[in-house]
Length: 152
Image (tube, rainbow, N blue to C red):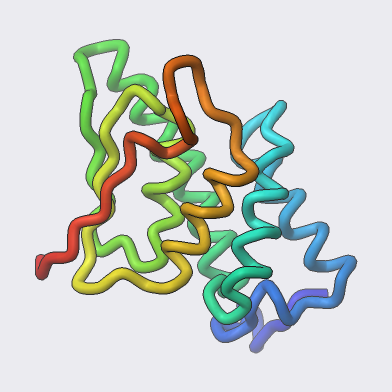
């Protein structure tokens, strides 16, 4: 069971601190939410959690995947109406939303923007580059991803 406070998830609960069964259920949920046939997502999240144990809060992780699901659908539909060649993830925090969008849309430039780059951003990028699948013409997954350190 996931840590809760009253009727919400405990915002300080880290993925790495979950019991093994809950950990595996959570990373499996992430892969399912990303989309059918994306089992590598579980490996990416698992590897990032191992590399940066204090970098992935369960509540943020689940909220990010839910947001990704909606934003990716919008970006896909918007691309049918007019060309969308850039996506910005403003105040990106750990950057997972931008990373997921860059992974899903490898031909679009994705820029994550925040006042500083968290250690978890680097762990997530490395995990996706090590465990993700590059598309044709891409040396590594996420070659379309940038981080811009700036105030908003």
